[in-house]
Structure formats: C-alpha cells, structure tokens
Length: 214
Image (tube, rainbow, N blue to C red):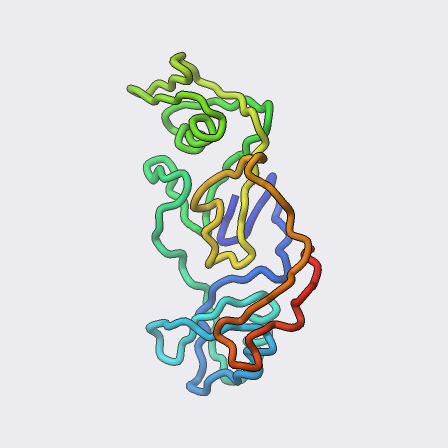
C-alpha cells in the first residue's frame, strides 16, 4: 500500500531508493536559487506555479535537504496529488489517489482469491486479457468461461511497477499489474543521462554515464 506517499510492503515501510524524487513547491524570499547549485544537484529547470517566488521542482531527499539550508529558501512543501483516474478505474469501491493507494495483494501464480462485484475491477484485466478467459459480471454475479464463480486462481506471477520519479511517473498506479510474460529484459547500467533543460555545457550528466543500476 501507499500511505502519505510512503510505500509499505507486507505492512513494513519500504526502503526509499536514494535517487527517488518527489515534487515540491520551493518558495524563496525573492532571490532566485543559484543555477550552479541546481546544476550540481542535477535539478532541472522549475515548472510554473501560481505562488509568488514559488518554483516547482522534482527533488531527491538529498537535494531537498540541501535547498532547505539555503538562506533565500523560505519553505519547501509537497504538492498535493492531482485528480486523475487511477487503477482499477473503480472510484465507487476504491477512492484511491497517487499518495494513498491500497492496500491490495499482488497476484501470484497458484494463489486463489475471492472475487465479487466489489473487487472484480482489480482482477478483470488479468482474468480476461492476460489469462484469456471469458469474464462476465451480471446482476452482481461473476461468470468465468460461462460458469458462475466466487473465486479465481492465478496462472502467472504479476509485478507492481513504480517509478523512482514518483510524482511524475505513469506507473502501475495508472495501469495495474504487469504479468511475468511481459517482462523481456533487465536494465544493468546507464549509458546516457540527458538534461533536456541544461545549457550547452550541461546537457550530458557525465557523472551518471555507464554507472551501474542498483
């Protein structure tokens, strides 16, 4: 589950990856943040925000801690999650948002779950699309391959994907579970890191080139 933007797995707080970013509104006293500081922290140009002397940045924890120490920075606030349709697209039964999501179980091969009209939206794509069964919900009852049922046994393992740029990632919170047969490779190292908003001499993030992905 996700609670107040923090991820929990089996009830335990998940260890945050050091490079994980969140979106913040950084307010100054009118003096802009030195560009060399932003470049050194690999912070891209700010987005617009309707707050006097306010700037919108994606920050790692380390970058946030550094900016908070600057004399011209008066406050750093998290950005409330925006209103958008999320998985499983069932706001009647699941009033989730980007920062408060779940709890839910990630499906595993051989595990059987109870299904009914309140939770079928979570498993419908798995049953009908990934595992190729005919699924029908009618008058509060569930039919799989023409037979009424109140349970389903998964045929594959599934994964839940979340981006490290957490507030700017259209990840599993938008499109749900990923079946094992859709995973075709593994990333081992970063061969190029590009700063689209940097000037001529700061386009390439040289410190990240050919670094291992951990």
